[in-house]
Amino acid sequence: MSVPLCICAEIPRLITRTAVIVLIHHREVKMPTNTGRLAHQCLVNSRLVLRGLEDDPAALGPDASFAGTPLLLHPTGDALPLDEGFQARIPPPYTLIVPDGSWRQASKMGNREPSLKGIQRVKLPAAEPSRYQLRKETKPGGLATIEAIGRALGFLESPEVERELEKIFALMVERTLRSRGVKPELQRM
Image (cartoon, rainbow, N blue to C red):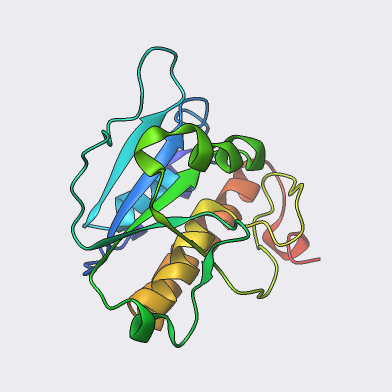
């Protein structure tokens, strides 16, 4: 992104009790429209873990220790919904593990990564559609990684964390569209 449109100075530094691990597919690392990296830059208590390189498994390890109950954001049939009563059922603190990649890449991570076996799956309730206008969404209800993290942290932390992530995400989308020659007023159609 060109310097006048750069969002680096606008990135918030959010401190959360919930640790976040963004399990990023190796093909997503260099994508300029990747939002998992942006979420990581915003969240002080987060880290990126590379996934998908042959002969180099993710660095979670089978005996990974987590700062709190590990939760995998992975909408499978056995996933618990993140809702108002979630913290009563499973008290904090948490480590939220979020696959990051295309829908196809991310959907496979929960089953292919040995260190994720046995970790409680969680899912987001149905809500408004994604505001991600930079890539085509292939699944109904699909979200950009930063949107999914924001919505999850809205339940696990506070609505303020969710708002801050949504705000930087909207700015990133708007400025990326502008860098592509799309006028901001046209993007809201």
